[in-house]
Length: 81
Image (cartoon, rainbow, N blue to C red):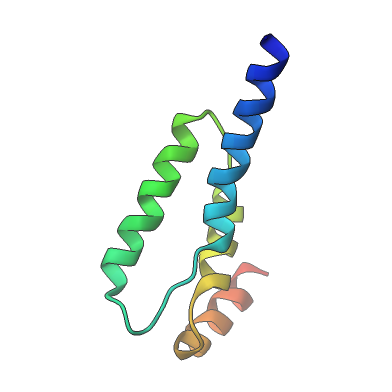
């Protein structure tokens, strides 16, 4: 039973982390509402005791920006180096 619980918990954690990795910012939607969805997902991740470094989160957010944010993405990418 303990093994089954660990497998289920691992599946839940993977599902939540996948939501972060699949996140995309869409120009046609209000940015703040999309940020709130992202923050909600992060709270779920932290509630499951999953650690994600701030640097990794920053990279994910920059990568998820739409093409209209190209100049900003390039500037941030250069600053991270």
